[in-house]
Amino acid sequence: MARKKLSEEEIETALAGLSGWATENKNLKKRFEFNNFAESLDFVNRVGTIAEERDHHPDVCFGWGYAEFSITTHDTGGLTHNL
Image (tube, rainbow, N blue to C red; front, side, top):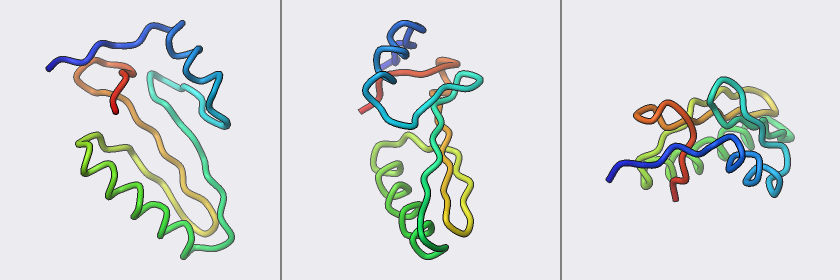
């Protein structure tokens, strides 16, 4: 089933209830902070498991004390409601 691309208004409404999330170049992005590398790695692995289950995979950058996620729906060229 094709996903419907969200309008700018729909994105703004959704982001109003989400702390720390922002849009950049048609991507939803957030940086998470942790106490050390092991915590960052554990979080990335847990998110990866969920992403695989939902077949919706973010771009991930992580290192000592942080993990950054960026996600979009490539086939629509923007953000969709994907649960």
